[in-house]
Amino acid sequence: MSRFLDNAMQILDAAESAVASGHTPTDMTILITAEGGIRMLADCDWPLDSLQSHHGAKMAYRVSQSESVVRVEGRGDSRTCVFETVKPERAARLLLNRMPNWTAPALLSAAPLLPAAQR
Image (tube, rainbow, N blue to C red; front, top):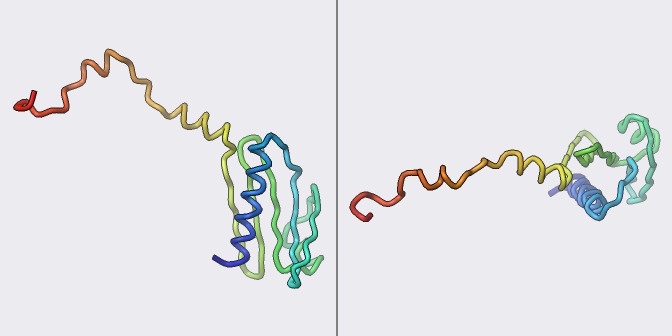
């Protein structure tokens, strides 16, 4: 995996860990220079490509979150990426809403799974 994508995944993992431990992270922009220097800007509303150009960064990442999603957007040279993950409580809600509502009478009235010769 490229350094660019590896950085994006590590940033997403860190943001997910913060949310899972109960923290509400601030929207954050992370700029990485060609020499490896890191600059972090909180709540910056500049477009990511403008920040990258203005600061001479090789790679730029923005971490944001909404009520149900943690998102990392990245830019590096000619590459871009967006990773999103559903927060755990939202994922559980989605899974529970998709589960069928089985009832005991419906299960009992279902046809037997064994062939007639083995019943």
